[in-house]
Amino acid sequence: MAYGIGLVFDPQTEARIREVWGRLASQGFATPLARPGCLPHVSLLLSETLRVEDLARDLEELGHCSPQLEVRVSTVGVFTEPELVLFYGMTPTN
Image (cartoon, rainbow, N blue to C red):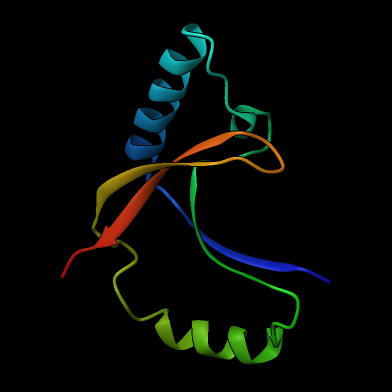
C-alpha cells in the first residue's frame, strides 16, 4: 500500500493559491489539483514501506510544536507524468 505525508496551508494561503489556479485556468492552464476534494499542499513523503505506528508516535511528539511553518517559494517546476502539473518549490526558513 502506498502512503503519503503532506502539509496543508492556512486558509489565507490556500485562497491565494486557488486564486493563482483560477488565473492560470482562465489562460488555458488548468490544474488537475483543482478537482473537488483536492487541496493545495506540500508533499513531504511518498512511501510503499511506511511504518504507520512509528510515524504516529513521532508525530504525536511534534504536537507540542508550533503548527505553522514559514517557507519561501524558491522555484517553479513542472511534473510531466502522469499529468502535467505546475508546482512551487519550497525552501524552509529558520
